[in-house]
Length: 213
Image (cartoon, rainbow, N blue to C red; front, side, top):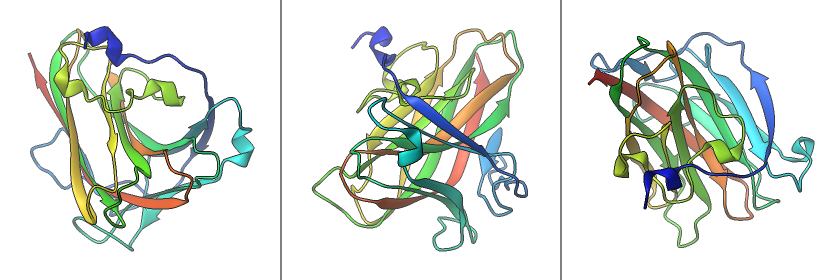
């Protein structure tokens, strides 16, 4: 697939909520940015989007910090959304500082929790890192796409199935950036609705490693 196919087009409507809890805790000393959510959401923002056929007010979703599950420590990010519309994406986003005027090799990884293995694809894990924050579903990669498989792209990310196994599973992507004119990138993690069922997932141990090239 040509690297331009990594981009998507589409229309969606975004719903945004800004959190007001204490900051998140990074636990990986080698990462340039890390989040374990031990101190709450901090400066993370919660967002959701759904297609134009549905009023955003009719799409139910929640993003918060929970002590129900944790890959490390005592807490993780909890993402819940309804499945009534067979559509919709829910995510949390945070700024990641970089030095402008340089190009980078970036790796982003995180642990996602699923309740069990399922033969049905109930949700997709979505992750993204780019010069601007995600606002609509089309801002995330297409189904099955991981930017690791491409060369230089405008942003990095993935959209891959959850419910492949019970419990925690690592999801990761690499991104070869162009020369960046910004000093702020935006990382996003969340879930996309596939199956008509409500579902809760947890995200933990998120790291972003940035290497100049």
